[in-house]
Amino acid sequence: MHRLKSFTSTSRFWSPLKKNDIFDVLQTQMCRHGTSKAGEKKLFTPGPLGTSLTVKQAMLRDVGSRDVEFIKTISFIRSKLLDIAGVSANDYTTIPVQGSGTFAVEAVFQCAVPRQNNNKVLILENGAYGKRMGKICETLSIPHHIESFSEDKAVDAGRVEELLKKDNSYNLVSIVHCETSSGVFNPVEEVGSVIKTTSPNSSYFVDGMSSFGAVPLDFKKANVDYLVSSANKCIQGTPGFSFAIAKKDKLSQCKGNSRSLSLDLVDQCETLDKTGQFRFTPATHSMLAFKQALLELEEEGGVTGRANRYKKNRSIIKRGMKDLGFKELLDDDISGYIITSFLFPDHPNFNFQQFYSRLNDKDQVIYPGKVLNTDCFRIGNIGHLFPQDMEHFLVCAKEVCKDMDLKL
Image (cartoon, rainbow, N blue to C red):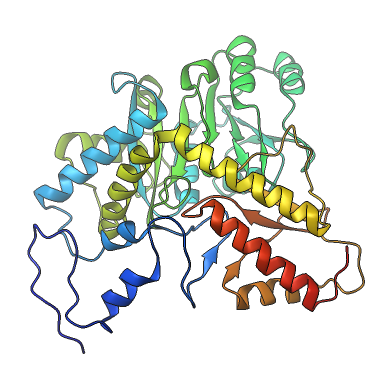
C-alpha cells in the first residue's frame, strides 16, 4: 500500500508521495476544462454525471456528521440552493434528503398530501419520470389521477386548464420540468399560472431533477410550492443525497401527514433548523463534494453561465449527429438542452448494443432511450463536459458508424 504525506484538517487536497500513487493518477485523469485521458469514461448521460477533479478531491477526507465544520457545510448548501432558486429564506426552505432524487420526490408526495381519503393528486405525465410519480402514489395509496400526454410532446397547459375547470379539488398538482426520458422541456411556468388561476387551493410540485441549476425558472411566476432535485445532476455533484425546496407556509401545513419516518420533510426540516444536523446519518462525502460543486457553479456564472455551456454542447451534438445522418426524436421548439434523443436509424447494419459497446470501448458512454413507443438513444449534454468533449464524441461516433458500415 502506498504511503501518503501527512494530511491536516486545513489542507485542501491530499498530496501524493509518488507519481504512480493512486491520488496522482486521479489528479492527472482530468483537466479542469474537459480533456480526456486514456481509460477515462466520458459520461454523455442524464446522471450520474462526470464531475470535475476538484469536486472529486473534496471527498478525499473524512468529516464527522456532528462536526462543526460539517454543520456549517449543511448550512451553506441550504442557503446557496435558495440563492440558485432565486427565492428568499423568509418564504422558502431547503430540506436535504438522504438518497437519490426519487427519495425526494416520494418525500414530497407522502408529506404534502394529507392522509384523509378525500385528498388527491393530479400528475401531468409525458414520460417515464411522470409515470414514476404515479407508481409512488399507488404504492403510498394516495388517490391520484394521471393525465398523460404524448412522450414526444410537451404538457399542454390549455388541456390542464380545461381539466382543472372540471375538477379543481386536487390537493397537489405535479409536473416534471425536463422529462429526461426524451429530453422535452415542459412549460412549468405556464402550467403554474393556470393552477393559480383555476385551482388556487392546489399546491404545485415541480420535479426539477434534471433542470435545476441549469434551466432558469421563476419560482414566483410559476407559483412553485415544492421543487426537488438531486446532487448529481446540473449542479454537478456526486450521488448520495437529494433535496426539496419548499414554501414555508405550505410545509407548515404538512405536519403529521408523513407516511414515513425517514422521509418526513417536516421533521427533517425542524431538526435541521434547530440543530443544524440531520436526524440520521447523512452522505458526508457527497455533501463536501456538493459544496465544491456549488462554488464551481457560481464561478461559471450561475444558472445562466452553466446553461450557456450546455447549450453550446447541445448545438455541437445536434449539428454533428445530423451530419452523420441521425434524426432527432423531438421538434426543436420543445427539445431542451439537457439531453437529446435520436431515433434508431432505419438501416440493416444498425444495432444499438453494438453501437453502444463500440462507443463505450472508446470511453464514450451514452444511454438507451426511455420512451415506450419509439426506439431511440440519448446523448447527454450536461455534467463536466465541454465543447471539445462533444467534438471528440462526434469523431468517435463517426468512426463507429464507419466500422459498422452505417451510411445514413
